[in-house]
Amino acid sequence: MSTAVHPGFDDDLVAHRRELTAAGVSVGRVRRAIASARWQEPVPGVVVAHRGPLTQRQRWVVGLRHAGPHGCLSHRSALVIRGARLEELPAAPRVAGVRGGFTDPPEGGIVEVSVPHGRHLRSSGFVVVHQTRRPLQPVLVAGLPTVRPARAAVDVAVTATRRADVDHVVSHVLQRGLTGVEQLAEETEWLGRRATTWLRAAVADAARGMRSVGESELRRVVARAGLPEPEWGAEVRTPAGSFHVDALWRAQGVAVEVDGAAFHLSAEDRTWDLTRQNALLITGLVLLRYPVRRLRSAPEACGREIGTAIGVGG
Image (tube, rainbow, N blue to C red; front, side, top):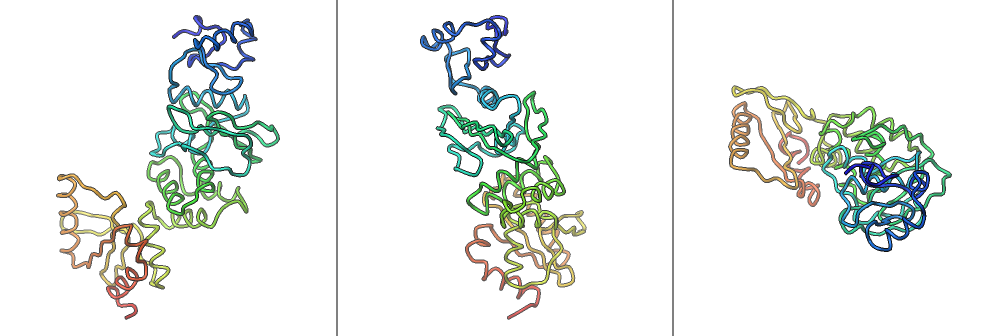
């Protein structure tokens, strides 16, 4: 829909009241359009030129209009716009730098934006405003100013209430190629004392070559049991080709694989998985497999089993 039909609005049919005034749209016209439900004002001061549900992009644009010219998408919103398999929060936690109230939108999750510290802008509607002293250095993604992926990932991590969520966001941005370990480490150092123990551990695991939540859980089991450090993500050559295993004690001929929490294979995947497993076993490896949930629920037992296999402990 052309902006010529709605002067003052952008291509997403979103505008701040100030922009409408500058375009010659009277305050009275705006009030009448909202009162008659032809337009809507999901966040005070930000107007959308239609009456229906907002698209995800329109919600992001509303958040940016509320944040002003120096704001940008951040936290989960900055990752979702890049295609990350994360969900925007249905309700955001109260964390440092967030002022005001906000509610769940009817058609999507909370939109998170960041603004430079000192603006005193309150969260409102479905928009959560984070204040930050760190330079935002936004880049355009789909035409919208957005913090960089590493920045977004560590910001999500420090607001997480579960260690598994921290591991997930760090491993996910690395697996998707959205950022690198070096960038995550830099952003973590920027946080200083705000960087949680969970975040520092997840980044350290990533620096060792671990790229999944399961590998991080396995490393905690290995460390807790006092086992020697294995090769992580190690390559094993077999007559059927080369394959990688999550952990390998090469000298002892023992490999460990972690099956994810959502480990469900199609018939085709199952065939490939068995072919790979058989190829590894033919080389003489002892192959142990653990679901993530067992590594979490019975770490001592898992550690003893692995120790027995590699000849450490009783």
